[in-house]
Image (cartoon, rainbow, N blue to C red; front, side):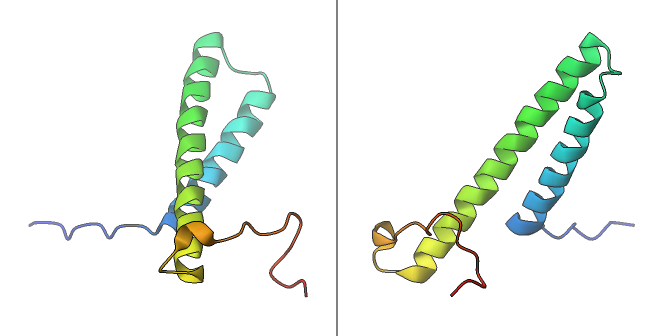
Length: 88
């Protein structure tokens, strides 16, 4: 019997999962109970997770720019540092 194709996860869900895995990996590495080989493998995994998170954030920024001004996304201004959605 053929399996139904797995639905694609959203970039936000992928970001959340990758960030959670990265945090768990950092916690494990900070305990210092890993061998050198395990540490290197964990570091490699961490770099990959970091890159996935960075790519997801870049996609989110692009979506915000496109929503702000679909005709000229390059004109969008960055959000002020320290601002939150609920601040007015």
